Length: 305
Length: 284
Image (cartoon, rainbow over all chains, first blue to last red; front, side, top):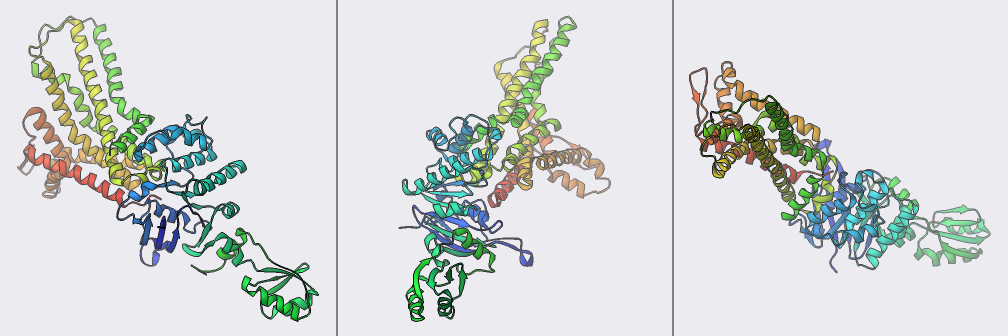
């Protein structure tokens, strides 16, 4: 199946020569249909610059960007199949929420039929007639999601969609995003700093730091890749001596944390048994995405692009 | 393109500052002429028994059209167009609409809608001024010249409109480019006003300045649009060009075709720069 989004060596620099600032360096990724793809990185990592390049707001300095198999340089038309929420929703403050969607619908060359349904879907049915300048951050965010869905897009790009939302709003947003992918077959590309949300929402994630993509993986693989194993065996000193020669090992309470992979597990058990230790359990330790993210973004340079 | 125009119209109709800068023309005309009528009728003067000449009366009937091409009118046009273009940067709304439309069509729609609304207001103001100028004459029973027909009146307004177009289009092109380059409403308005004021000052004082910089000033005088705007107005309204004598004994007197080409080149050049710059601009 044709990828919805492909970035190949996408780069963006500001300035020239030694003074050039490289906001994004050689980012390559592919997003498939009906996938929810997370784009993670600390502030200033290049997430927003990359998203703006995807939307044709910023011209890339190098590399290639393909939407539905077409480059933006060939034609801006693939963007007509894209809906977006950038910077928490940018709207005309002197117009009501409904009028803003109407302006957008007219710009897209579409009718107004979906506007009321979308306002209801994002919980703004009652406030649609109010001017946007009176909206809270969360209401703007909801209107931004409605705007992103207005053109019934195949690809939805959301930059920090949960910003300004309360706990209930975040949960509603999560349900909405998952349903877009699972029930309507939409592809969602989202950036977020709420790693817990990303962990629950996304099929795959890319981690970007200092403009460079340092990792891309399925969420499950990412957590497993870096998790290691928690071993309960006794006597613990015997078990530690048996394993420490082969894998980085440390004692954590009454168990051992062993930096081993799934493929290492049979060898690990044999070594314990061979050393005369009683094995009670060997289980993968589940680090959360936040721990993985921090360990990757705090280390220097790209590890696995 | 029609969709972009429709979206732009919806936006501009609802924005107070742009609404005010457009409709200030008919509203201002209504207020000023109402006061003038009250004063004039309050004096209780007898009706004038001598009718003015038809041409003078028609010129007076269409005299509103002098305002858009005047310094004040051009400054209002500049402020209005600057808000229309720079507003999108101030509200950060280019990010909302740019992904859904080719950039040239967004700029073209802005030019089209802002000028159409402006001319709708000018037209309303011109008719109002025409009516309110005639009203006290009719109440007093002043003598009217022979030959006032809808056709003659329409032609007088058409000439006025045509004479205003070059100055209005040039002001709009300057303001739009300033807005796209500076990305801020205030800077765009200030730059627009400065450019237009300098252009008018230079056109007025060029003969004097040429005493100090002969050759350079003469060349600039015919290259810059100021003289050509006045020359075109003279050709349209009076049927003859503007002759400007310089202290060295030379005179500048262009035909309408040459001035039209110069003004058109300036307007097209400035608009093309706006399209080109916006087309390559990063929307951060």
